[in-house]
Length: 296
Image 1 (cartoon, rainbow, N blue to C red):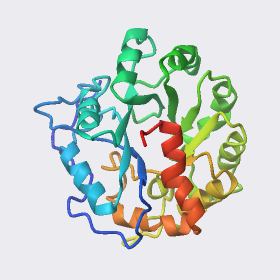
Image 2 (cartoon, rainbow, N blue to C red):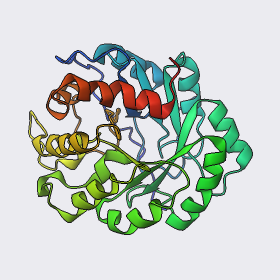
Image 3 (tube, rainbow, N blue to C red):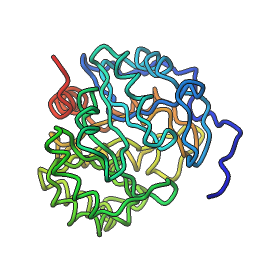
Image 4 (cartoon, helix red, strand yellow):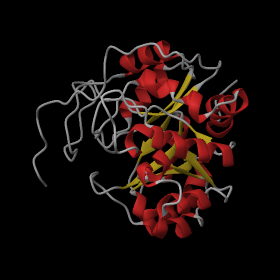
């Protein structure tokens, strides 16, 4: 295993700006992470970088700035299978924060039940070359009946080319499947590229949901003042076609990125992704409230 870079990397802008768009009451940021503090929640030895701490207090402050009322925190590979950092944030969130855990495929039923009781709603598996612990899809599918028994769903993060080999087996999941970051397609290749077409067709199956997060990741041509037009266009198409199966998130604090995006700009891009109030309401409020089972 190569040595982990020891110099901490700042992945987010601590001087967040207010967005111009006012979010509806109950708006949910469905994809964020928390890092540290490392002296309380140590980073995993197998991590691929060392971040500057991005603790729950910084996340809560960002959400006050953005006008976000609810959130789903996704356990990061930076912390590995030690989900305590997310558990701690959920406990401090007053019912407004839920979680997605990282677990080994041989996780016990008792641990799945414990995580569900702590406010976790799913487990996530990575199929990415840059992240440690890539998984075999058949082992993951074998876990899904046990996820169903625990009241958890499946979240997957894969490289765009893998959509063609993962679509058919994932359709056999015993629980709903959430696809991260629009399948990490290259948005600059357009809506007719085979990877995006395969993702789009997957969503015709009601088993699947998609996070139309990551317009800043899938648009490979960021400028000094990026508008992420290509990413916005694909997100807009997915939401227009599947308004009840899309979720949105900032992906704060933006690990493993090419640049440091503005969270306010990501919020303001929602005016182009969801140009009518009903779509914005479904994307930010109705869909996450129903799917993640937030308390009223």
